[in-house]
Amino acid sequence: MTLLITVFAAIAATLLWYKNAPDNSMRYGTLALIYWGASLMWFADAIFEYAELGAEFFTPAAADMLNDAYLGLCVLALGFIIWIVTLLIKDPKGIIRKMSVKKNL
Amino acid sequence: MACFLVPGTEAIVTTIVTAVVKKKEKNDLKKASYEGTSAAEKIGTKFSTKLGWLNKMLWGGSALLAFEHIWHGEVIPTFPFLTAIKDGNVGEMLAEMGTAGVTMAVLVTAAWAGMVIVSSIIEKRQAENTDSKEVKV
Image (cartoon, rainbow over all chains, first blue to last red; front, side):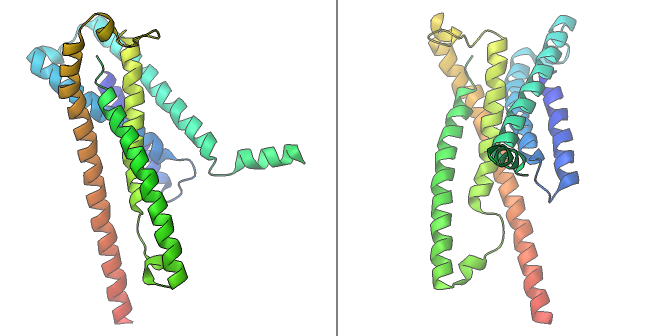
């Protein structure tokens, strides 16, 4: 479930990046790469889990699924936080720099 | 257990490599612009930018995976920070890092290599199209 949620987030972020390209001021590409990286890593994890569990891997218990979904949503939130912190630090539109200049004046 | 440490370590290495490559590209560009050679006019995505894609995937993925390990109680806030070490399952942890961790790092790097190859082909085609248009004119 975590893998699935992250993959959907990666797809959505990629679509956002593509829709806004070549304008990169919102750094949607960074968000997409964060989620794709995590998706690939969880995919590798899923391969090993499938090798261990077999078909049982596709029929998780409801409680496990709910916990994984909750984890997936928390992971999405953390991805957004990393992206927004990166965006504010890089400040591609120069908004924070302009604000600090105004305050200094 | 601690599989995220493998791509995390790779992320540290690639970040250092990116910094070195960036510095080299800057120096090359400066040199080329002084000499007035065509390297200064070279178009296309810089290799340091392409390495940046890998860095973002590795750092982002490792961070989210580390969070998952905290969620499952495999990473703890006190020394030695990993439950596997605390419980004396170091062998098992290393085996997992060697299998799942290495697969994660290889998979992400392979995906990045695919992205680099595709973007290089697109840039090459664009350059060829521009050249052929210039010849026609």
